[in-house]
Image (cartoon, rainbow, N blue to C red; front, side, top):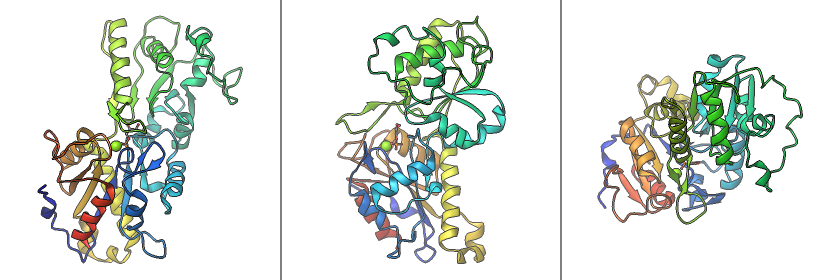
Amino acid sequence: LAHRLSHSGASPASLSFGIAFDIDGVILRGRSPIGGSPQAIRRLYSEDGSLKIPFLFLTNGGGVPEHKRALELSELLGVHISPSQVVHGHSPYRELVNRFEDDLIIAVGKGEPAAVMTDYGFRKVLSIDEYSSYFRDIDPLAPFKKWIVQKADHKVHPSYDVFEERVKGVFVLSDPVDWGRDLQVLCDILSTGGLPGSGRGDQPPLYFASDDLEYQAAFPSERLGMGAFRIALESIFNQVNDHQLKYISYGKPNPFVFKNAANILEKLAMSIYPCLLQTKELKDQHLSTIYMIGDNPKVDINGALKAGPPWLSVLTRTGVFRGKDNDPHFPADLVVDTVEDAINCILEKEC
Ligand code: G3P
Ligand code: MG
């Protein structure tokens, strides 16, 4: 397959390239490393364990604070990953802290969504699990959910007056666990101006960390992602209200996500090669090439295409994409079987 890696013009002497790795379907499936990812990542470090090539993980997943994910990835891949090398779908929420100040906000999704928002500096956060637990009978199906365990950190009396105080923002951080309950409670919050059980009111702002319809997890075929949940919520909300649901989605393929990743990679490059700071050339310039290695044409490759130079895209066959040739709608600059093949090609060209 012909590829177009040659137009970057990166100079091997400057080492002015960086790499962004997608996680699900490229580095991991579930919690298992795939496609030779540990070996591939290790090639980006020197023998003494220090970082040699600037790289980060650019995933639409999340649900745990970036420092926790960095630890988990370090253990799985056998190298030291710093928190600054992990960009989750919800990482941009950090920039919204001032907009919500002392407002009550709800965090939705698997993992520890409330802990992530608190980590970002939000002051009054409740997970949808905890919030729902205070409203008796809010989920009429709860008595049939024999698998539900009341979390130990849920108080009998809420820290905030949830029966009086309106929810001012809803943030979906990761794939919701109990879709039925969450669809019901979110419809309540969003239709009533933030107070379930009260009359109709203005919709509080709603944010999604990404809009992936499907993604590659451990099961052989793709699983429904946050985009599928968004479609379900939007269709139901629009049926039960006489106006349309309003929302903002972050994550790839949004070009600003790629811009932010480029900024982080440039900072990493400067910390790896402090001497480059002296070189006016690189100080004023950006990295000549940044490779996005992903498995999802619609998300990863489309994002790199939209972002434009210095981004180039590499599509692997270990996840959502399984085609023989290139994707017809969002063609990548290079198509390879695995992330290890991708790193072999990139290092051969750049070093
Ligand atoms: O839930 C995770 C999924 O949406 C995609 O993750 O790493 O393939 O961007 P990733
Ligand atoms: Mg992926």
